[in-house]
Length: 432
Image (cartoon, rainbow, N blue to C red; front, side):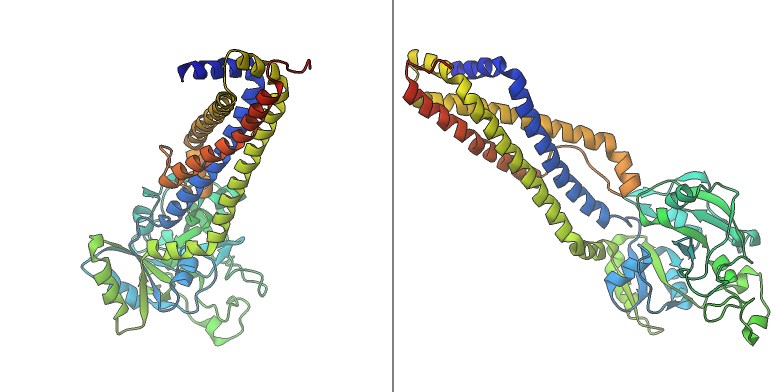
């Protein structure tokens, strides 16, 4: 066996430039296949951990998927809100460590505005990591500092897109925009006090304001029309700037963190049995797993594309090796003269082809891991995918085993060609 391995190595080395291109072709196909496989697994895991620091999301009773879409990803609109008093009841529960209200409705140049509290910046986590600051810091508590009602924090994508810096002033739009004229809150300009570092989570595309500031902007509004345009008694109602008097009547949703995650089901049952109003408490991980099933067809399509790339590469390998057989007829005839049986020549060519493919598979795996390791920060901040370079998963190992099997099948054709040539030519190979 060692003799045939040595012969296969020296034969391959004599044609190293052509076979190097074959190995590169195999390695590129392996890189694509393993890259798609790992990104698929890491994307699903990252999607499920988009809110790793939140144990429950509470909102009006309805669809859990819709609650996740509008409260986490700011996609769609809630059909109704939940009462602010229910938020207070939840925050007073002994099992609850922190509770953050989320108020939606306004926008800034197409980006959603979140009314919330400073607790969000201390407790929110994505992929197990807390929020970091690119510039500045969190807005203050309006109860302690009334000026905090005019402060705003930007997500990384919003700041990058519009070139904002700490200290800039901006004006929010009532609703999603595109409605009646005079829908801007130009009578309530805000000052940027902080810009979040990129996380890859939906918060990068958000504008965050204090809950009291959110309520202050909407004093006197009616039917989506600003006080300066609304000619009614509501517009003439006295307004207040006291934070303690700007408690909202309702909020869109509540993010909840517990002291002990083992209490999540008991807290969930207690919240859903409130007599004040019908509520539901959703486990983010479970709901996100269900939501992932919606895009599973895209996931399967990527795997199929990777498999087709591998099949195409293996067909190319078979074609290159098959064409090379015409130039190796003298070599095969010499081996026959030395006493090699036709079956031995079949195994010899098959061994050589499999070694080239195996080298390409190893190189492709190494290239995939190096690429994942070097791009992990960019993937996390740009796409929200937390990649984990290392040994391949079970699915990846099965894919590699299938790839090795395909490479053996692709090598059978040139090996069979070598077998047939050795029977036909014998000691009299053609001159060309």
